[in-house]
Length: 123
Image (cartoon, rainbow, N blue to C red; front, side, top):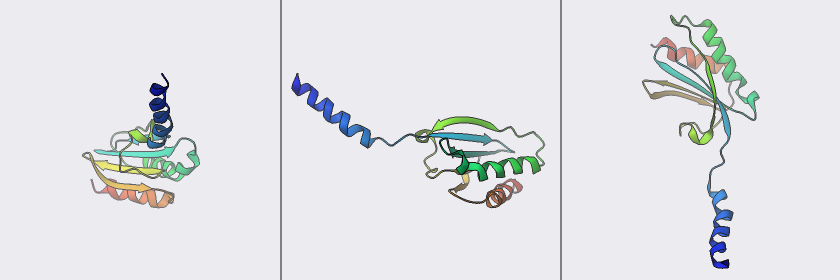
């Protein structure tokens, strides 16, 4: 019986160190004119994503989209997110399933807004 417990004990000590830590992330997405835009902010520190969210809301309020753009919010875990998103907060802009812009880390509302406008005006 002792022999059977030793492998279990060893695995219980080693396995948690091998698994990547999963963190909760707020995901806010919207789909303007054939694009998919997602903002990822750490759930434990929402202040970090404030500039991203402010830029998103400002663009939404200024845009002349023919259809109203709905913001969708959900919670996910870091292991369920695209592999390209490694740093938080982040904004991922995709068109036809292809990533055309990834902004991550600390940046200004102005710079984020500029990137959103740049891509949305090209459509």
